[in-house]
Structure formats: C-alpha cells, structure tokens
Image 1 (cartoon, rainbow over the protein chains, first blue to last red):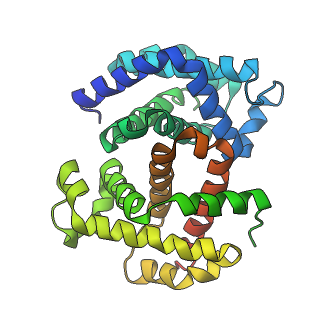
Image 2: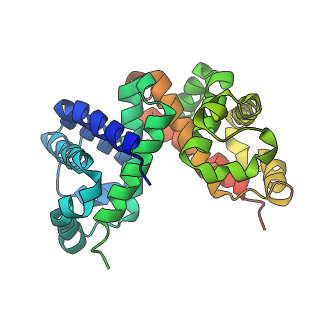
Length: 141
Length: 148
C-alpha cells in the first residue's frame, strides 16, 4: 500500500528524471543484461550494445512509461492497459523478468540519486515498481 | 563449483576494499527492515523498530548489520570455497534462528543498492555490479544450503 506521501515522492522523482529518461533507462537495461544474461534473449534481433540507438530509445520508452504511471498511481490499470495487451499477447516476456528490470532500475536510481536514494525513497520505489509489474502482467492469464 | 573470471575476482576484491563494513552493513540491514517490514519478526529482542527513525537509530540493528557485513570478509577471502565457509552459519540460521532464506536474497539486494548509492555509476558499473551480485548470490545460496 502506498501512502499519499509516498505517491507524491514517487511522482516528484520520476518527473525529475524525465529529461534523462534515455540515460537512466539505457543504464538500467545494460545492468539487467549484464547481471541476468537470460534477459538478452528478448533482444536477439536488435543491437543492445552500450550507447546503441536501440538501447537508448528502448530505455527512454520504459522510463517514460514508468513516469507516466507515477502521475496517477491509482489509475495504473487504466494507464497501462495498452502495455498490458502488448506484453501479454505480442511480446510475451516472462513476467518473472519484470522483477529483474525493477531491481536493475533501483540500482540505476541509487547510482543517479546517491544520498537522495533514502530508505524512504527506496521503499516507495520498490513498492511502486512491484505494483507496476503486477499490473503489467495482469492480462497474461 | 563456482567459476570466477579474473575480471570478476578483481571486481569483487576491488569493491570489497572500498567498502566500510561499519557504514554499509547498518544501512543495508535498516533498509531491509524498512523495505520489507515483515523481516522484523526475527529481531523481536532488538527493541524499538516501530518507525523508520527508530530502525535507523537502533544500535542493535547497527551492530548486527556490521556483523553480517563483516562476515562477507570470509567469503571474499575464500571465493573458491564459499559453500564450505558458510556451512556452519547456514545450519545455525536454519536450526537455531529459523530464518526464511528468502531474506538472505533481499538483504543482498539491499547491500547492492547501498553500495550503488555510496559509490555511484563510475565505480559500480554494470560489470562490477554483475560480479558483485554473482558473489552475493553464491553467499546467499551457501547460507541456504544446510536447510532441511
């Protein structure tokens, strides 16, 4: 359960990160690919090397979607409806991988925010990303 | 047997050399209790854990965090024999402490995040993270090995 304070904090952080969405997203993806090589299997058809245009554009897409969801967390199911369909029927990414990207995203946030990645921010982000992943997987079965 | 590349050994030992056990340990354990509050079930004798401030200021949490983090020294010194090195601790966590081994994984994640926040992306690169997380996952596995 996210408190109002946590929702405001999450919204504020993601708003601040929107201008560097490509960098944060690409960093999180790179970290995920390095630590969990199985995740690379979903990208065998594209160039995901560091600084590749696909890595940056894909990273940006992911961060912007997370930021959009953060604008109104109570509406997550509505906001994510198109992405739910995409992941369930087309991409078919095993939803267990969402946890791996969430952790990698937290590491990127920790690196980027440093001291500002306080225990409160960490807990709030962890809860939000878990909720995001759960909603994203809702149409799978 | 775990296979370590030269790069991984270098990364793990290099990162360990930078880590202040008395700093990162307490931070990581505090975060575990704040992010996964059900972990408090194992620390009933630690006193006040009712608020984030209480957790972060609790001297028993700090001491235990330091102890746990310090224990990783044995693993760093015995990279090729972590399973044996942790066998007794594993048995203790199972038979005496009755800790759900999933908590080891969560604590490992908290340690990585504290390290990331402390050292930033130029030190905690994707490659260093991979080596460090592989190291922690071996320790986590060793800690869960003697459960029955």
